[in-house]
Amino acid sequence: MWDKVQETVSYIKEKINSVPEYGVILGSGLGGFTQEIAVEFILPYDEIPNFPVSTVQGHKGALVFGFIGNKKVVAMQGRFHYYEGYSMEEVTFPVRVMKYLGTEKLIVSNASGGVNSNYKVGSIVIIKDHINVMAGHQLRVKKDERFGPRFVNMSQPYSVEMIAKAKQIAQKFNIEVHEGVYLGLQGPTFET
Image (cartoon, rainbow, N blue to C red; front, side, top):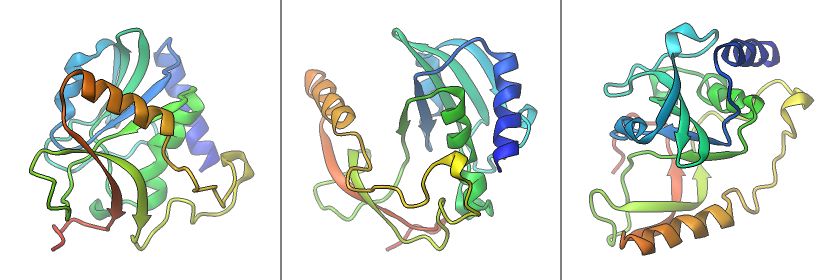
């Protein structure tokens, strides 16, 4: 895995001249968000060594590098899912690549169901914690110290500062947001 990540990072660094501060993983229906990016480079997944290719309708399949305001970003226009038949190593591969490109912060979006009766279709929910009940786990791999610890401190898995900033921005623009705990399931069925 280490060699694959390093090969991919080397390829991308040869193509771009940028270190993205933020990584953005765009979920279903948000691929158009890349129109908000002042684009410098677009790299289709099928041209990037070792990169999986999304099979989900509406996921275009490209890394988009550029700026949002004065922040350098790399956005995944489409992502890979465990339910597509990819292993957890493959699903999390792009995040490892972003890390070794120099990305410090990660924003992930998705469309999912909710059990809270206060949520409506289209509600924005900021994840404050999660429960993983998938059969696979992204840290269940052969140990390689270069990727960091196997047993990650999960007392604060999501940045309190980034959550506060998101809520502040939502309030400024009068956007209703909720906070919730995400239950990670295998999919692709819509669980009852």
